[in-house]
Image 1 (cartoon, rainbow, N blue to C red):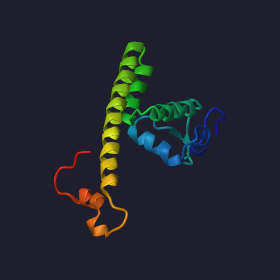
Image 2: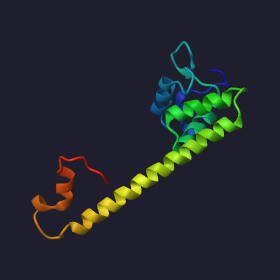
Image 3: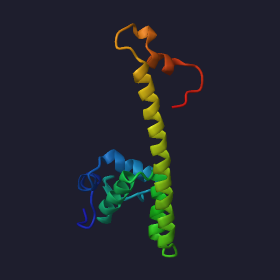
Image 4: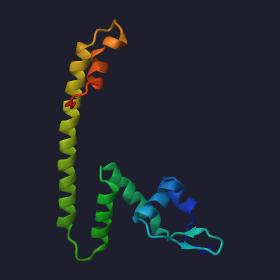
Amino acid sequence: MDRQTLRIGQVAARAGVNIQTLRYYERRGLLRMPQRRPSGYREYPPDTVRLIRFIKRAQQFGFTLKEIDELLRLRNDERSSCSEIRSSAQAKIEDVERRLRQLRAIKRALGVLVASCAVEGSPRRCPILEALDDEREAEP
């Protein structure tokens, strides 16, 4: 095997992911399909490790794989500008703010349910279970 290429297990270990993650990224188009040896082993260029780490860091910032695909496209397109990437990050901030509002509403609703629940009593009369079983549209 060429010293300039890595096998799938080597890439996974160096990037801190499992092999299935690499295969999934290939199917999603985030990674190019690697060259194969006659034996069938995948051969990845060494910069694949850096790319995987980029994807994982972007996920830690809350970017979806679809959004990461767009970031990668912008990163590789010499015609793109930093302002386009900034717009993506700003949109992600707005998404995070929206989700935080939703989580606060869920926390308040759960607080009301917990406060209404008597510690003693039958689970059949538990207000938390009743609220979860309510057929009406639930709003936290």
